[in-house]
Image 1: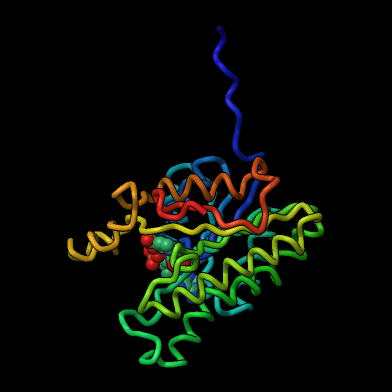
Image 2: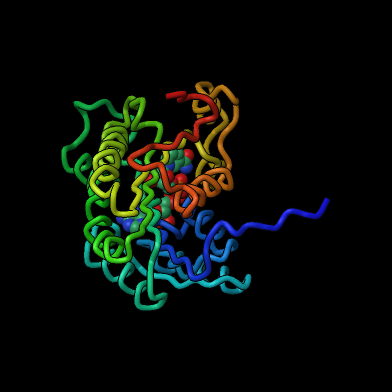
Length: 257
Ligand SMILES: NC(=O)c1ccc[n+]([C@@H]2O[C@H](COP(=O)([O-])OP(=O)(O)OC[C@H]3O[C@@H](n4cnc5c(N)ncnc54)[C@H](O)[C@@H]3O)[C@@H](O)[C@H]2O)c1
């Protein structure tokens, strides 16, 4: 029997912008996409971190550029996206992995409104901003993929993380509506709802905190960055053409809905 012909996940000249690509899930995604031949623009509020990820992708033989981009600033998002269009000709996908935890460890009546609103501004409002920036280009080319990293906290609600839980739930609702808006235009809009993923931040937490996080996960372990990046790569690939407005699970069996 002859060996199967390898199938590329992405067509030649596929280009993606990864916001929050300077660390963690965004960085792992940028690296995996580049390894699969995608031209990646690594965008992050921390412009040095973004450039360092892009430079190491280029050193490894991939194609990447970077942009200093605060996702709460529409002009920054537009500059990063338009810069990628100018450089690549077309952009096919935006991954939004930028996020903050917001006020932690306090019940709602002790949370300042300004802290709550700041969490929404970083975690939720960019769902609108990114659409305002990217969708006109996607409509013109009749193709586009938008993927937001939400959280299991948005599905289940984590106590004492009211800003985080509300912002991620909002993002899940936004994706449901936006997916339908563009469902006949070749554009998909989806989200991801990871439970705990192993990042350097997690490694720095005391074992008791990690045990608490793990006790709700049937698999009894954290997710790995590669597992998240693989799912994102699939969701923003041409193969994932019949799913939109959906939130993909990555929770080791915790969320089975
Ligand atoms: N790590 C987990 O266990 C986990 C679980 C569920 C959901 N998430 C979500 O995944 C996403 C990425 O998390 P992570 O663990 O990789 O975090 P991380 O802190 O390692 O990386 C987040 C990146 O986003 C950037 N960023 C933060 N605010 C920004 C802004 N305003 N504009 C642009 N960039 C900004 C940071 O500079 C950083 O590079 C977040 O949205 C987070 O809520 C993470």
